[in-house]
Structures are given as structure tokens and as C-alpha cells.
Amino acid sequence: MGTRLNRKFFISICMLIMMSSLFFNACKKDADPSETAPNTTPYSAPSIENFRPMPLDAINPMTLEGIALGKKLFFDPILSRDSTISCASCHKQENSFSDPRPRSRGVDDMVGPRHSMALVNLAWQKDRFFWDGRVNSLREQAGKPIEDVLEMHLPIAEAELRLQRHPEYVDMFWKAFGTKTITKDLLTKAIEQFEKTLLSYNSKFDKYTRGELSLSESELRGLDIFKTEKGDCFHCHSSTAPEVFISPDRTFANNGLDTVFSVLEFVDFGLGKFTSNTSDYGRFKIPTLRNLAFTAPYMHDARFATLEDVIDFYNDGPKGSPTLEPIMREKANKRLETLGHWGLDLSSEQKTDLKAFLLTLSDSSFVQ
Amino acid sequence: MPFLYHSKTILSIYRYFYTVNKALLIIIFSFLIFSCKKEEVTTVRFSIKSTGLTTNGRSYTIDDSRTKIFFSNFKLFTSNGSEILVKDVFLYKTSKNNFFTFNMPDGEITGFKFSYGLDRAVNNTVPMSYSSSSPLSVEEGMYWDMIKYRFSVIEANIDNSPGKNQPPNSPFSMHLGSDTLYTVINSSVIPFNGSTVNIELDMDKLFVLDSDPFQIINFSNHSEPSEIDRAVAIKNSFVNGINIRLWAPD
Image (cartoon, rainbow over all chains, first blue to last red):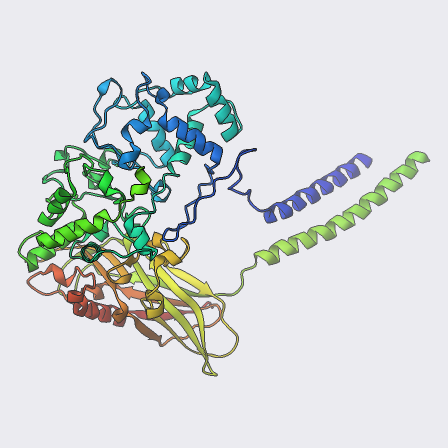
């Protein structure tokens, strides 16, 4: 009898405890995602008048220690197989962290398939990274060139081991992440943190937006061409997202560089290679327009040496292919009905104006 | 004796806790049940209707995943003549955001209206001034410098063949916007507490300009100055085709 009573008593108490904890846990707040490792200094992003607040990443909160580590890793050739190149070898600051060479070169002088993308205001870039969108996050992107045989060609385990043997790195990882065990996850997070601090917000256009100066007549005419259907630029490069000048609703596009009749004829399948979706063949990440003055040559395959070449290409009209950006095809068809051809029909003066505006997006203070 | 004494004590403690426990459990359960109880709300739900054919017999398909339409200024009228705003801006997205709810205010409700698009005051703001969770934010991608907020974003394909007998494979986008297109819609039905207002959008009505021979300019429209007359005609057809019904629980 006593045992049965005790058991009932015990069960009742347990139920009470369970209900109470259910009740209290239901009201409990989630852990603060901005929490960082102990002894770190949270990074405070500058408040930029004409920008949206920098998006926060709960998985990789930025700290001064993490950024310092990422910067060291970015510039250190230790992450290449023969210790000859670093991230900075193909992402040069003077070129807005792009590469003036049409194709970047890796260890053993291996030539990559595409032009190196500029690294600027990356915290506002979303979705997939790389021209072909093969990764979903900046930190994932940061790890890929280390192992790529055409780039740094270093197995990630070897990279971890090298850094682990380096007392300075062990100390920096400890300070940044509270651990002395160096992993790919942490090293890519550090590089991501550094890359997100590559902020460019002092172009002439930024200053114009902030009311600090005026644009010239030619630049203003170019802006009008840019943001209207005279130039049709804004469909992919919207000034409503001034941090990157990439439209929020359009991340990848086939901008009509080549005429092909079947998607299998594309020399580079682009996004389609990774999604296996035929509608993605020939589509590439829409690049930022920031710092165009420093990021030539242009397009994923660096086919255009100058901005004039780029403007001429768009003025002539896109080339047809099954995955041509629908809005480009549609607008070209409309022009065919009204003008009799696919081209934009910009005059030489208008092309000059458009170029003048595009150059206002360059920030010389960023590349010094 | 001591054993008996101890047993009685344990029994009385047990009874005490048992009683307290029962009371506590009842309180906790009641709290959970009442805290989970839904308040009676009124729902405004949007749906689309489409035959896939224009009135001129041309087949079309719409990419539902990209359809976005702004409605705004959902207001109730009361018997004393006042207007009560129940929703300022609603961005309809076919499957992702097709309804909202509100609590009916007290008093006799005598009318209900809402608008297609955004009024001049809102349309002249910029997305940068809204947080990313707002339908007016940069992230929604509804703003163009050229026409300010796009009121409708429709991405579609249409059969452009002379015989109107081919699959729809000519892409076009119908992006209607500008202050001119803002239109107030007076509802003949009046919601009440717990009811659902169903607003049915007839997509066929967007293709009112279809004629022979096929011309892409009758479908592709970005409300440019040269296109605004056609944009108004399309908007009028679409707004006039909106069907509002009331559903009430038994």
C-alpha cells in the first residue's frame, strides 16, 4: 500500500514538474543569435545613409577578432599548395578585389575558366555565389578556391594542418572563435567575416544620393537612360538596392551574349550545370555595377575589354537563345514591332551619357 | 506505532500534495487551453480564376510563383460615418501570401472598400525607408525608379501564332504601376465578425486588349508614358472583373 502510494505521489510530482517546465519553457525566449564567442569584440557595421542596414548572420556573427583573422587568411599564400598565391592574388584591392586579367591564374599557372568577380558590399548579396551560383553562402564560397585544382589546389585537411602548426594562427583562432582546433568551417567563417567588411559607399553616385554633390548634365542623362526603358539596365541592376546595384527579384540571367539554338551549345552552362535545369543553362550571376572603373574586363568570360564594348553590345540587342532572359526577349520583340530591330537605338551621345553615369558608381577611396 | 504514525504522516502529505497538484493541474490546463483559444477574426482572402484563354481565344500561362499585386487601404465604414482602416498595404502573392485577418471593430458596420495599388502618399515613398519584412521593402523588389511601385507584377507566356493554335511560348511581363492606376474598389458585401471575404481575381481580364494580328505591345506593358493608355485599359478590365463574395460560418 505504502509503495503504491509513494509511486502515485512520485508520479504526481513528476507530472507537476513536467507541466511546470512545459509552461516555463513555452515562455522562454530563444537564445540571442548575436551572441559571440567569449572574449570577442562584436563588429559594429557603419551606418551608411543611403544603404540598408547590413544584414546580420546569426550563424557567423562578425567580431573584430574574426575579421582580423579572415584578413590575414585572405592575404596569406599559406592556403595555396605551393604557397605562391593567396585569395588576394586574384582579388586585388586596386581592382575592387577583382582581377584585371581576363582569366585568373592558379598554382602551376593553371588558368581558370572565368573572370574573377569583384568583392564589394557582399553582405547585401544574396542567394548563390560564383558566376555559376554553385554555392549558397559566402563562407561556402570562401572555401572552394582553396581546394580547386585550377586555383589554390590545397586539400582542406592540409590547409587545416598547416594553420594548426602555425602558433600565430592557433592564437588568432582562439581569440576569434574560442577554440584552438582549426577547422574548415572556422577558417571559411573568418574569411567571410573579412569579406563582408569590404564596404564601398563613397562613389560619386553615393555622394549625390546623400546630397553632398551634384551629377553633371551628362551623368544625369545617363541616369535617366539607366533607370528607364531607354537603356533597360534597371531590370537587372536596380538602383533601389544601391549597395550592389543588383535587382532584388533577379539574381541570375542569360543576358544574350551568344546565339545558340540548343542549350547544349552553350560553351559554359553556367547555373544550369549545378541545377541541371535546362532553363538555367547559359545563366550567370548578375554582377554588381559598383566600381566598374576598376573591374575591367567585363562579363563572366571577360569578353569585353571596355565599358564602351559593353554598352555597344546592349545597344545592338541581345543574341537569341532558348534561355535568353525573358524580359530581354520581350523588350527586343517590342522594339522589333516599333523600331524594326532588337537594338536599343541609343545615339552616340546617349551612349556617352550612359557611360558617364556608370562611372559615377566607382569609389576610388575603396581601391586605395 | 512509530511505523503507523509515519505512514499516516506520509498519507496526509500525499493527500495534501494530491489535492494541490490537482488544483495546479487544472489551473495550468485551463491557462494553456484558454491561451490557445483563437479569437474570432475576420478574414480577407484572395484567389485567382483563369481559363488559360484570352477572350480572343489565345492561350496563355502565368507564372504563379512570380505574381504579385498590391492592394491597400482596406477600410470599414461605420453607421456614424467614420472610416476604420483595418489593413494599410497587402501584397498578394498567389500561394505565399493570399489572406490576412483582422478583428472587427465594435459598432454597426455599413460598408467596406479597398484599393488596387498604392495611394499617392505611399507610392511616393521609397523602399529603403521600410524594414525588410515590409511588403514595401527593397527585398520585395516591387519598386522601379521609372514608375515607382509596380502595382502588379505578372510574368506570363502567350501563344503568338496567327492561328492561335500553338502552345504559349512567347514570354511577356505585365508590370502595371504609376499613380494614375490607383483605384478604389467599393465592395457590395460587408464583412462581419468571423466571416471571410473572398476576393476573386479574374486573370483572363488582363488580356482585354488581345486582337488579331498578335502584337506583343497589347500584353507586355511596363506603364511607360507611351504605354500608359493601354495600362489603364488593362487595369480597368482587371479591376472591374474582381468578384467579391462573403462566406460566413454556420
